[in-house]
Image (cartoon, rainbow, N blue to C red; front, side, top):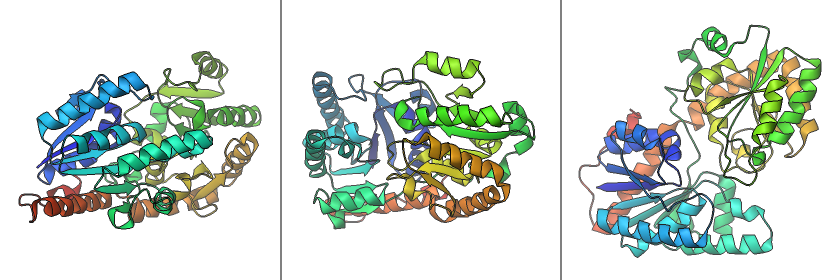
Amino acid sequence: MRLAHLTTSDISLALLLGHQLKAFQAAGFEVTGISADGSWSRALEADGIRHIAVPSLSRSWAPLSDARAFADLVGIFRRRRFDIVHTHNPKTGVLGRIAARFAGTPVVVNTVHGLYGTDGGTARRAVYLGLERMAAACSDFEFCQSREDLEALRELHIIRPERSMFIGNGVDLTAFDPAAVDRAAARKALGVDDATIVVGAVGRLVWEKGLAELFAAAERVRASRPNVQFVVIGPPDDGKVDAVPREVTADLERRGVVRFLGLRTDMRDLYRAMDIFVLASYREGFPRSAVEAAAMGLPLILTDIRGCREVVTDGHNGVLIPPRDAAALEAAVRSLIDRPAVRRQFAEVNRELARTTFDERRIITQVLEVYRTLLAEKHGRAIDGLGQEGLSGR
C-alpha cells in the first residue's frame, strides 16, 4: 500500500511527522513525504522515506503559484497512484485534499492542526471556512489535534462525527525522557551554572508567538533577577509579515536580555537544561513544543488559548495567562522562580501526563486503525500485509 503525507515544508515532515512516518513504514506501507523543497528532505531519505519536492508550494496563499501547485499535486497523485494521501497544515490541507480526490486517490485523510483562519474578520472567516468545507467534502476522514477545533467543525457541519476524531498530539517518550539526559552536562553545554534559572521558549521568530510579551517580561525580570536567563530556540522566518526583525534580536542578545540559539536538533538536551518553559503564542493548533517540554518534566506557562488549553490545566500542571499580556507573563515567571516546590510539582504532573496522554504510539495506533478501516471499505475486504510492527514506535 502506497501512503503519502503532504505538508508545506520538509522540516514538518522530518521533525514533526518523522517518527510517525517510520512507524507507518514499519507497519507495511511504502511511505512518501511531499512538500516544498528544502534541506530536511535528506534526513527523510536517510530514514528510507522517499521525498517528492513541489517547488510551486509555499506557505502563503498566492493565486497563481497555488494554481500551479494544485496542478503539480494532481499530476503527482495520478503518476504515483497512492492508496492513501494524508494532508496536513491549512494550505496543503485544502489543496491536497481536493487534488487527491480530483486525481482519483482511493483514500484521502486530513489532520487539522489548527483553525487559524477563524481568528480574522468576518470576510476572512467566511472564505477560510468555505475552503475548509469544500476540502472536507473531498476527505474520507478528519483527525483534529484540538478538541475545540473538532467541536467547532462538527457544529458547523463541515465534518461528520462518524468520519472524524480527536487525535491530540504526542512525542516519542523514549527520546523525550528526562532520565535519558544528564542535566548537569546539558546545563554545562548551555553555559549556565547551578544558580541560574533558565526560562526557555521554542518557536519560529515571529511576533504571533508572543515574543513581544516575552521580551518585555524578560527585560523586567532580568532587571531585578540577573540570575534568570531567558533563551529562545527557533529559526528566523523572514518571509512572514510578522517576522521579528534581526536588529531586534541582535539588540536583545547584545544587552544580555535574551539568548537566541537558532534552529537546533538537540532539543531534548536543551529542555533538560531549562527550569521553566514558556509559550506566549496568540494562536496554536496543539503546540508540539509544549508537549515536548511536558514530556521532559518542565513546568509550563502557556497562553489561555485554543490548543494550549489541551496541554495545561491552570494551577495543576502549569499556568495559563491571557495572550498579549506582558505583565501577566512576568508575574507568572516570577511566581515560578520564587516557588521551586511548585515547579517540582508541575514537573511531576507533566511527566505523568505525557505518559498517559502524549505518547505518540497512541496516535500511531489510532491512525493505522483508520487507514486499515478505510482501505477495507474501498477494497471490500481486509488488506493483508499491514501489521502492527509500527506500533512500537521504532
